[in-house]
Amino acid sequence: MADDNTTEMGATEFIKQLKKTFESLPYEIPIFLFTKQNADDIFSTSSRQMIRAFRELTDKIPFREYSLDSEEARKWNVNRAPTLLIAPEKYNIRWLGAPMGEEGRTLLETILLVGMGRSNLNEQAVKVLKKIDSPRQIRVFVSPSCPYCPQEAVNAVKTAIELPEFVSVELVDIQCNPDLAEKYSAQSVPQAYANDILIGRGARSEELFSLSLQKLEPATLFIPDNDAELVETDLLIVGGGPAGLSAGIYAQRSGLNAVVVEKGALGGQVATTPVVENYPGFTQVGGKTLVDIMVSHALEYVPIFQGEEVISIEKGSPMIIKTSRRIFHAKSVLIATGAQHRLLNTPGEKRLSGSGVSYCATCDGPLFSNKSVIIVGGGNSAVTEALHLKNMGVNVTLVHRRDALRAQEYLEKIFKDSGIAVMWNTEVKEIRGNKKVESVLLENNKTGKIQELAIDGVFVSIGYEPSVSVAEKIGVALTDDGYIRHDGNHRTNVPGIYSAGDVEGGYKQIVTATGQGAAAALAIFEDMIHPYWLETEKTV
Image (cartoon, rainbow, N blue to C red):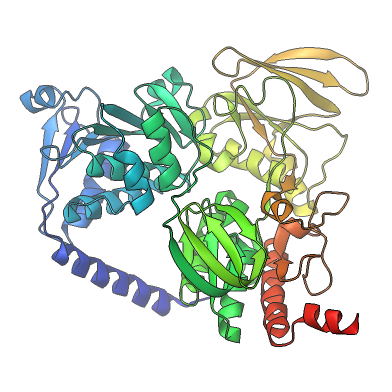
């Protein structure tokens, strides 16, 4: 772990580079802040502080603050406070709330894009947007604690810069504007609407966002044009979690050219883990902080292609991998796609997902402050998230199908001392509600007693299922439990295809995943020197 001097030097270098970047911007970035008269609430104060911090680095951010009852507020049709307007004479980009926490990243990127006067969207996304010929009013719901939100929010900002004549954007902080979140049943973040139509939940690639915006409906798959860019590499790593990032570092250090492709947010499950305990070098560390350290380290060695989904893998020499943005030629592929949240598969769950049903307390917990929720599960994750929700002021009850927790001993003790209520031997049979969660139907699996409990939200934390869709497409064999079958060198049954991390099963620990990623990279290096499949063919 870096010492304080190293950390300070890194921060100084970052500020130096940021100042240099601001100096190169060709355009000013005027920002208007609208507040209630004499406002000193946390949101207005935080907005002023954030803008002041950026203005200390450059003179290219003219700033004005106006009252909500001013003529300027009427001119720009501002009726909520605080509201930020960014370059309103040129673009229609506004922020309802304050850019705190993770949202500070969104504000910085927005300022830089506006200052450059270009969207920086990739070619495929721009092609889709050119088909739009009528207005699109985008509203993206975000939260300061959500590491996925900046990706979706910046997607919206980029479209507003690319098509200022058609696209307007409102970024809505659900903590500052709970009534708007309630109105749209946006009880998970990020959620994006266009012309009051839901066009997507979760962080997505630029192409998927653009396609959803163009079609005014959620898009789940983007097929790129045939003229996609070609990238040649020795090893393509699918997945940007701990296993994939570690593999990238060790592959590159071994002398292999490697790339990491990740369709979502980097870090996988770790990015939304409130607190990581006892990762070597850290007694305690925030999950997102740990991810940032890992990503920064990996970027020193390996290119990362974030926001790209692997569409197909064609076996051969080289293998041809088609993503949502380009084509890769690779000699080997490492599948480190991790695992995804396991569903309850109970009536109402999918229908109300994002409208009170959540799988991320870090992302969605702030919306349920002073409300009542249940968290379903009894392992480390469920206990950790229950404690996290309680600390955010949520009235939380743990619902567990067994009569004892499956969490580690020290977590159980903290949980017991917290006073969080528990319903033992209880299972969720149905989640009820019209547009949002209103109640749950619970059954005691010992007595058979059924009861309906009025509730505002359901947080599901019952473990994970391996993400094996990429593996299945190419014929990789799976175990009876659905994990990738592999040998001691992380080889699968398909020559040149390897696996590492949670997708292999075993211990679901960050340190295990990083170790597997490193081991797989070293094995791949050895196999490239002495291809085991060729030796097998000779023997036969």
